[in-house]
Amino acid sequence: MDFQLSQDQRALRAGIRDLLDGRFGRDRMRAAHERGGGVDRAWWRELGAAGVFALRLPETAGGVGLGLAESVLVFEEIGRALLPGPLAATQLAAGSVKGAAEGEAVVALAETGRPVGHLEGADALLVLDGDRTRLVTGGALRRLVREARPVRSLDPGTPLWRVPELSAYEGEALPDGARLRREGALLTAAEQLGSAARSLEAAVQHAGEREQFGSPIGAFQAVKHLCAGMLVRAGTARGAVYAAAVTGDPVEAAAAKLLADEAAVDNARDCLQVYGGMGFTWEADVHLRLKRAWLRAGQWLTAADAEEALAADLG
Image (tube, rainbow, N blue to C red; front, side, top):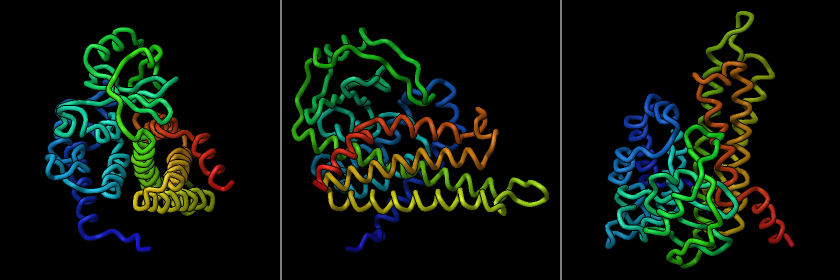
């Protein structure tokens, strides 16, 4: 099976990277984190105009008409840029929530027993309860927001709210909840992959610039080993994520999420080691990637659930 990207896929990836580099560079990313996260509506509309949310809708419905594999490439670049917001939930609900495809509506993700990110200002709530999925909107959503309470978030780019029991809020049932959860997990895995790759890039760059005892720290064997391990983790995760995007297999998607979560978290940790104490300071971006990676690891499909899926397949 050939997993080489086509010319159109490479152009798509380059285009979204150029867009993010040009419109959501480091200054804008840092500003979003410094104001406590949340969704920048103007930027959300720019993403909608670029086709990020309508990427998989058919052209007859005003979409771009591409597939899951292309969405994975886009979300990999989104993860690399540390872009905040419930992007996966909004794309998955784009065909069901008015304005979501154009970036005029924000769809937040809610999972039973977990805090909800980006609830304030959300136009709809995509609720996951096992393999059942529904959209909470209108009066039910407004009541839920009134009854929610903010909680401290580890990730400064993702404000969180503790919500009451979600079963108390009615909503529109969506078909094939298992597929939505699987695809959400895969898009999140792609974000983790992009984050892991960016941590590797940052570590290698710093190791080449930072000097100790008259030599770049990248010349030291311990630092070389850290960077090599990061390269292996990112490469392994990329193969798993790309393969699952092509096959759509639930077990492969579970493996991809597991490997991508590990790559994002462990690469950020190793990048912190390469940076030394500088990595923990607010001025550095390394700790932001680690915190976001921790948060994403608990979304859509946890490590425990992914391991259960893999064990069941082996049995």
